[in-house]
Length: 215
Ligand SMILES: [Zn+2]
Image (cartoon, rainbow, N blue to C red; front, side, top):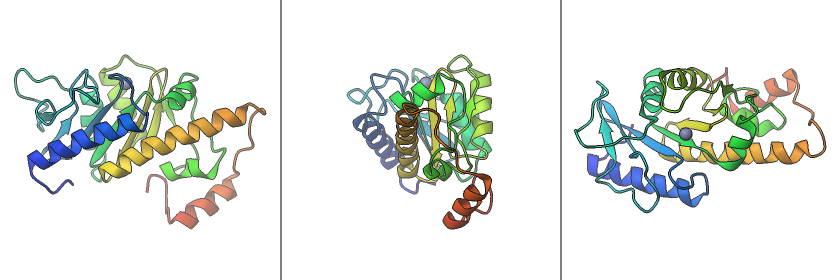
C-alpha cells in the first residue's frame, strides 16, 4: 500500500502515467493508471494525456464507488476497482493499448507459453478475456477474474491490464507483456513456435519460487 500523503500519492500517479507514456505503452488517451490509496483508489482522469494529467485532475474514488462532483475518472474505473477488490496484494494497475499486446489480443487467444518469460505473470500462458464494451461491468468482471491467477491479462479486441504490489511492478508488468507479445509476433514469422512442456513449466516455477499459479 502506498504509504505517503494524498498529495504524494497524486504526484506518484502523475509520474507513473508519464512513465507509461514515455515507454510508448500509451498514446493519446488510450491507457489509464491507478494506485490503491486509503480505502479507495486514485485513478487517471478520462481523456488524460501525458501533457494534461496533473495532481489536481487525478480522481479519488472511495470504497462506495463515489467521487467528487465535477471530476471525471477514467471510463475503466470499474475495472480497476474490481481488480483491487479481488486481489488484496494489488496496489497499482496499468491498463494499456500498447501495440503488440493489441496485435495479439485482437486474435482473442491467450499468449501461449512459447518463452519462459511468459511464466513471470504466474502461469504458463497469459489469458485473453473476451471482448466487451469498454467501461462495462462484464469487462471489469472478466479482467478481475483473470487477474486472480495472473499478474497480467490480454483483453480481446482491446488491449492489456497489469497489476502489481507497487506502481513500478505494475508498469514493469505492462512493459514485459508488451515485449513478450512482440517476441511472439516475431517468432510467428517462422511458423508456430514450440511451446514449453508441462515439465519445463514446473521447472521454471520451481526456479522462481512459485508454489502455485498467481504467486
Ligand atoms: Zn482500454
